[in-house]
Amino acid sequence: MIAKKLEVDEKKNDDENNDDDELTMVQSPFWSRLRRSSKRILLSGCGGGFDIYQGIPLFFTLRKMGFDVFLANYTFCYSLEKETAFDMVYEEQNQKKNVDPDSQPLYVVVSAYKAPVESIKAKTYFPEYYLSLYFKEKQKMDVPVYTFPHVGYRPLCKAYDTLVEKLNIDTVITIDGGTDSLMKGNECGIGTVEEDFNSIFAVEQIKNPNVKQKYLVCLGLGVDRYHGVSDVSSLRAIAELTTTKSYLGCVQCLPYSKPCIYYREASEFSYTFMQSTISIVGSSILTSIEGKFGNEHWPGNYRTKGSKLFINPLLSIYWIFDNHGVYERIHTEFKNEWKNCGDLFNEVRSAVRTARSKIKQSEDFISKQEDYPA
Image (cartoon, rainbow, N blue to C red; front, top):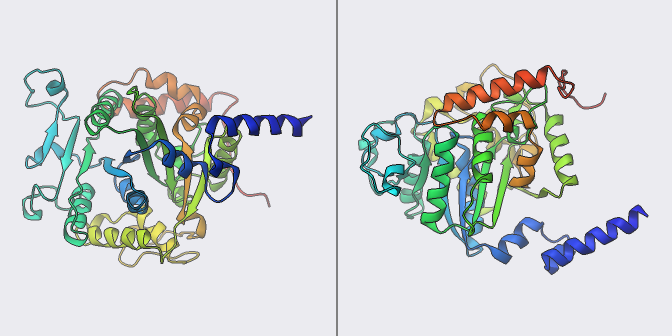
């Protein structure tokens, strides 16, 4: 009886997708869905910082497949509005009002073709600029990074809405370095989900009818051990997302594939400008891609000195999910609190604290750190 139901569900799924690729194991549903209905893709860093760098192999792959691909990132650069050489888009502009000089832009078009490195004010930490500079100097490409300020929920929603309309986007792929974005929120340790959840929620609310597909892609399963996230929690999330058909497969990053070579090249290029803020996540993933195993540290990254790392092949796999399925799985307490979030990022932090406090007092809370069976 169960087998018969599964067979019916499979047939229904095949009829809905109407794609022979999904009758094989040659490629995951993610690729066939993109080929079927995507043309213009926004690849966006989900959790801030260097997250967009973890999308570099995807960027080159998607371009090679014939898609128009644009880069965005939710920044940790707090002085973005001072970088006046770049084009800035404000909410008031969309409403045909005069721009308040003290207002925060919805996004900044960070392009190395607009400003030489000498003119940059945030010289020691500006991942978005140095990525654009890499494309200019090493790839001879003009690739701006549409950069979202470190703002609260409402302006991030507005920024996504404005950007997808401007670029005529039909597909949004957010990239997370790590897998804390997969947390339900009731786990013992959930890492730093503030930016991740804010991005997932903002992408979920995009109402533009042209945006047909929304995905979350994670690279670096296990790197969030550094922030108290159990690998078992991540694997359980993948299992549960499989049952809702929200897990869409995975791709291994290999050291000899050209997109991954460019990923390493771009990261090393940017690290020369930001030696005091080398990405722990990115350098760990790159070490994994090299085939290293165990307590291996990226040369020159003093930030992990004294800590014990567990570099392994799981770190170098792209795990691909439907954004809606990830959103649906997040604990209701977070969704309730996010309704109260406005313009400020402090409201997002407060929402996480309040939701966690409520969950810890409920039967849903997993009070002990999950671990592999003995």
